[in-house]
Length: 119
Image (cartoon, rainbow, N blue to C red):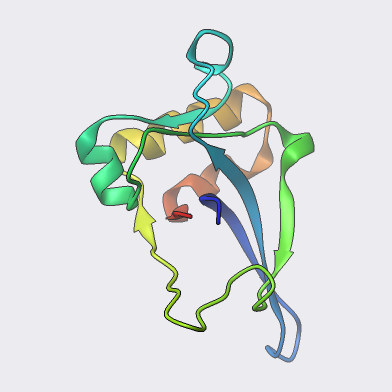
């Protein structure tokens, strides 16, 4: 399983189906090329709050924003598996907001409610 940064939640009108807009995370930090474009969670305290075991880079490129339906294919809690959720620190939220603003993203305010679901 891969960690994801939840960027937005979606629920249909009758509240029976949901989905999440996510940015995938990777341990391939690419710091030299992507430090100012993506969100990198590296320090111990940031990783602790986010629930991440290793330094992780979340790809914020708009073309890579993915909508995943809330279903067992993507979010499976069966057979002893669990979803671990974390949060961004205030500094992480600020950096996320700055990166999204640089992209001209209208969703920059979503950083306040961003969640991290580690893999």
